[in-house]
Image 1 (cartoon, rainbow, N blue to C red):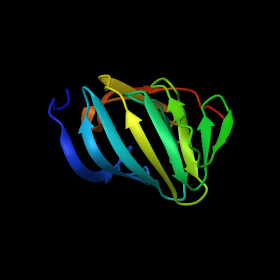
Image 2 (cartoon, helix red, strand yellow):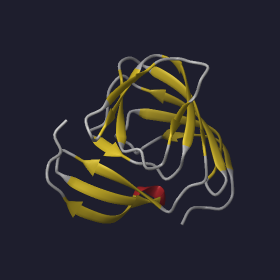
Image 3 (cartoon, rainbow, N blue to C red):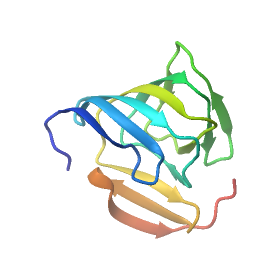
Image 4 (spheres, rainbow, N blue to C red):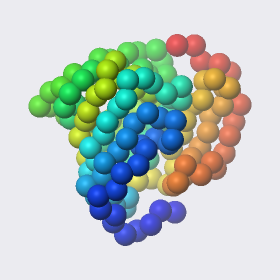
Amino acid sequence: MYNNWPTFFKVSHDGGPNSGVTGYWLIEWKPVLSIVFLKFNKSTREAYHSHAFNAFSWWLKGEVIEHHLNGEKIKWYPSIFPKYTPKDCFHKVEAIEDTYALSIRGPWDKTWQEYRNIDGQMVTLANGREIIEMKQLAEVEE
């Protein structure tokens, strides 16, 4: 399980080292909430993913396309209105240009998942991106 104590002013990858997203955390307190400023580098990850938390995010600068596993695509631009991302939203985010967001995240669940469409695997992850389970699935076409 994760550490029950808050950390402040941390910088690290958000979504693992291959995500292209850097997180600048004001606070990360997984049992309670996290507030993080995100920088999405122009690109996307190959892995669709769910989250361990629900989140409200404000797009501040740039443009992204949110790709859902079911093929739906949604463009997001800067707005005063937040985007709500429920923990069961299975998606990946493609930054059309370097893009910035502020995200407030709720308490973490113990696990979340990634669909690695390169090798057709559904991976269940826990804190620290520890792999709990891997299942081979059929390819999902975009």
